[in-house]
Amino acid sequence: MGSLYYGGSEPIHIDDRALAHLKVVVATKLRRNESFTLSWKHPDGESEGRSTVWLHPSIPLRFVFDEVEAPELSRRWIEALAHSANSSGGIMLVEELIEPSELAGADAG
Image 1 (cartoon, rainbow, N blue to C red):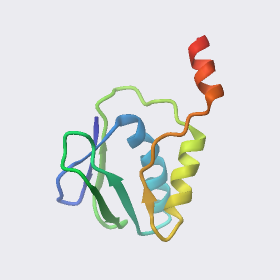
Image 2 (image 1 turned 45 degrees about the vertical axis):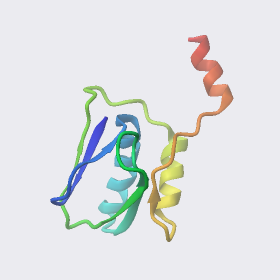
Image 3 (image 1 turned 60 degrees about the vertical axis):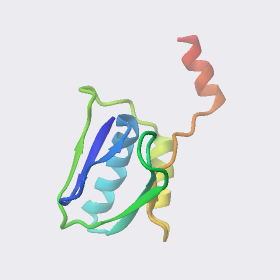
Image 4 (image 1 turned 180 degrees about the vertical axis):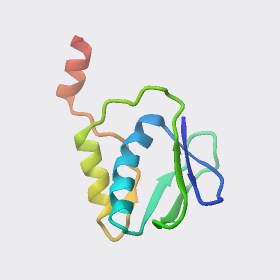
């Protein structure tokens, strides 16, 4: 489980794979000097509900991963996150979409 540190707030705990995909989209938005919101459902073990933060290029942001190796990234998941990032609701951290054909390929390997 990775962590996202934003400003002086408590860390936001996010699965390493999801955090790696989120990092690509967030870095792209901030590099363009764009502000936006990021929302997520609280993970198991935390209080039920969801949270939202306003991300701004001037506020320190740090991504911390538990895994040493970066995961292979899914273009489809990055595109889904980027699409939500460009909406009025901001980024909603969604589950990775895996096609049945991708699962079949993984089972064959």
